[in-house]
Image (tube, helix red, strand yellow):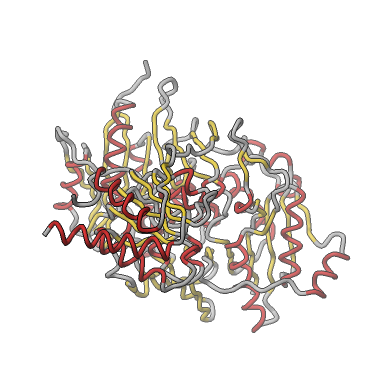
Length: 265
Length: 337
């Protein structure tokens, strides 16, 4: 069985600071990580490999050259092969152009049974690349997976809903997007880290020479959407502190709520 | 002036078990403004079984054209048949703009559909507008966990498409009802188009209130320190006529159900009153509640960022202040009766 896990290197949004003057993100000093949902996708693939060593896992990413670090982490968790799509021409891609480029890479990889992605990335939170990739490849998709059972060439997926879940059946090949409820990702293992670090070309690098896409269909040029502007969310009005002992603070708050008609007088 | 002849603004009217979701009415109300802004016609698109009667109610929220495609295949959402049907309708009617609620189904459908019709899609928008000069749709959404807002345009592809976050826009019935017409659409799919199959549907938390509909929310964070703290918050919620919510920290600690999570990765709420207890105010939480009319923060750290968003701040121990609040609120009720 051949599995492709599509991952993204993202800035750790817990540590993000915004320049209040320019309204842009200060990237300096912000650590880059493997997108958390993507680790759950990889963990599912690894769990299949645990019980069937013939499972072959390719991790695939598009990004700048330093995204190879994220792929090395995935190799150190147990993936068999890592491919980084990197090219100036791919830069500035929106979700359409990203999915289009990933689809070209999947076709070049050739045979696969299952594609796994994280439900969404913490930087963009769009949850779009998975379904767009599935559509470009013409394969089934199941999003928001919280549990997956394999039965021969079919999958039973619990798809998380706002008020419960659906059980969706699909044949392979298919693309599944993983939520954090799916499993607990394992840590990297030390021998693998050592091996991956020693191997200079552990991560295969493909440029557009390998994919042969037209410049009109990748990166910023190939993106239907554009960012017109970005800005910091505006904070609300000035706070009024209600001081005193707890019972005095409570009394002041009840009075304030009364004057706002939020509590019966 | 632009050439504006009969530009169509479409809202996908998602139904579950034959009932439209609240987000449908919210988007219609907002899309009414957008349609007026481009001198367009507002349409609602209904896929379902026996929905004609209810579909007419969409006119109350401003829909002028109500497209209904009636077939058993559309009774329950399924990615492939919904995508194929809507793609066929987009090809036939060439709407200028298509909005879809950013529900789990909407976020499954939106990208598949946008890919199929080769256009851009902006995810989970919280603000919509029309650029006066270009007539382009301005789609604004939070990014980087709510740290940044980005306004996105789709200048050269059609339709301009966005999924819209539930709970952000107010559903409002139209004062003057439009002259609406119902347009029946032939089904363009068959069961062979399905690549997946719904084996069963399981409902959980059915009795849990949808916090997006609540007028008053009493919300707890990591600062509550333990699961029992939420019993205290429930008491406060009961005393003030509200419902309980939570921050991601509290949900991740396992103290309370994820269905009650407020924030960028949870739900967006706009209650009249939001009481944040033991919530530091991470930007991703603020992204979900800063639209509340009045915000109260109770936190022991006077430098907590939540106080920058709050209208009233109480610095102190939640376990000392909240029992006092409950006592005084119950006391004031007793005096009324």
